[in-house]
Amino acid sequence: MANKLIVTAAPHITSADSTQKIMQRVCIALVPTLIASVFIFGINSLILTAITVAACVLFEYGYCKLMGREVPVGDFSAVVTGMLLAFNLPATLPWWMAIVGAFIAIVIVKQLFGGLGYNFANPAIVGRIALAVGFAGRMADYPKPENGIDALASATPLAVVDQLGSSDYLTLLLGNHGGVLGETCAITLLLGGIYLIVTKVISPMIPVTYLATVAVLSLCFGLDPIVQLLSGGLMLGAFFMATDYVTSPTTDKGKLIFGICLGVITMLIRHFGTMNEGVSFAILLMNLVVPYIDVLTRQDRLGIAKAKKGGAAK
Image (cartoon, helix red, strand yellow):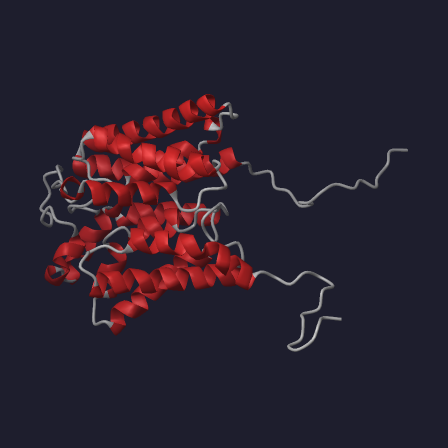
């Protein structure tokens, strides 16, 4: 009779989902926004995305070959990084600048720290911030929509927030305004986020908490919460970047704290800072404190009593 007592190391509960399957679902969720960006800004959106994806894949392949590591290109994580990086760029950005961003994201942020699972922050976020600091003028050069429909000025809506009214809600939903590829069509980002939640790729805890905090603070600051929710990179950040497995908390309490802090930092930057957008910096700052959040909110081990103040646990 076969031995039914099998002793193995943790984890003892596994899932049929692999990294490849999860990343492929993220790519599927991003496709509607990519299609919308092509419709809004033209074929440059597709070309820029293809370039960042190809650059990320090639940089990962080349670095792993150079260092004698196993090449993980097949897990699609580099593809996701490339798509997210492109979604943080204006369609008019020179291609070589996008390649620089891909190098920073893959080689410096991801591979130099050990590869997938060891990066200290979301690679696409760091790539975007590095480009925004190094090429501020080109990163703020938002193109006008090319679909021939009346739209807002080429500036991102957060830059002209005082001019927006309820009549522009539909414009914000459809994305017919200036901005980067992933901060335009809010409705496709919502659809993609819902798909990720339904397929259980992400937990709704972080995006819902993040968006709710932004809405509440918008009211407290006397701002239109709908405009704040639908403009800027909030939807992209909430559903696709703040929920990154490696750089977000693993506990429910931690995710709640993470989402609230993201909303607070984002609104403080938007309302009191000199920059219109605060999502990227909020996510980067919170990525850095995720290890501490996990330690403070982790569940006590079974059978281990908490130590009492002034004495040892029994």
